Length: 168
Image 1 (tube, one colour):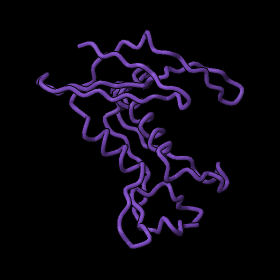
Image 2 (cartoon, rainbow, N blue to C red):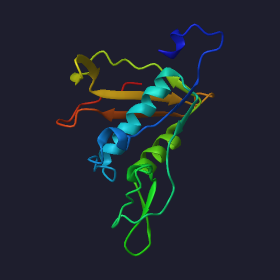
Image 3 (cartoon, rainbow, N blue to C red):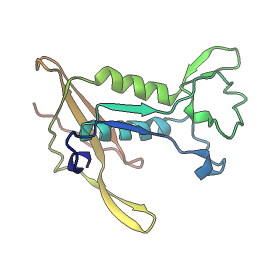
Image 4 (cartoon, one colour):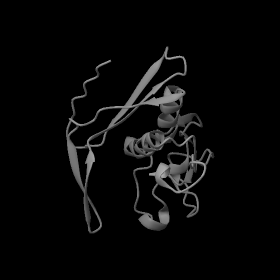
C-alpha cells in the first residue's frame, strides 16, 4: 500500500502502462477491441481510487488507424487507441475510451469505506503464486458537501454473475 511507504508526504500519483505491452504478448494479444480490455483498465482505476491516488496517467495513442486494417507498428499497439476509424472513415469509440469516460463521470471528491466481507473470493494463479481476490471490486465516492455519491463495481469473475447488495 502506498500509505505504508515511509515518506513525509504520501505518494498520490501513478504513471504506468495499463495495457498488455506487445513485448510480452509477442503479437498474439488480439483482444484490443473487446470489452475485456476496458475491464482490466477499470480494475486498475478502482485500485488507484482505493489507494487514494489523486493522479493516474494512462498511456494512450490517439491516431485514427482503421479497424479494418489495424496498425502493425511494433511500438504502437492497436489497443492503446481510444478511437478507431471504421471502413467509411467514421469514428469508433474503443473500450479504453468508454471505461475512462465512465469512471471520470463518477469521480467525486472523497472515497467512502465499503464492507466487502461477504464478497465471494476468486482464486487466481499468478506464476508460482496463488492468491485470493474479491470477485466484486468496488469503490464509492461522495462529493465534499455530502450531497452526491457514486458507486462503481466490477465483476472480476468472467465465468459467473455476482449479487451486489447496497445498503445506505
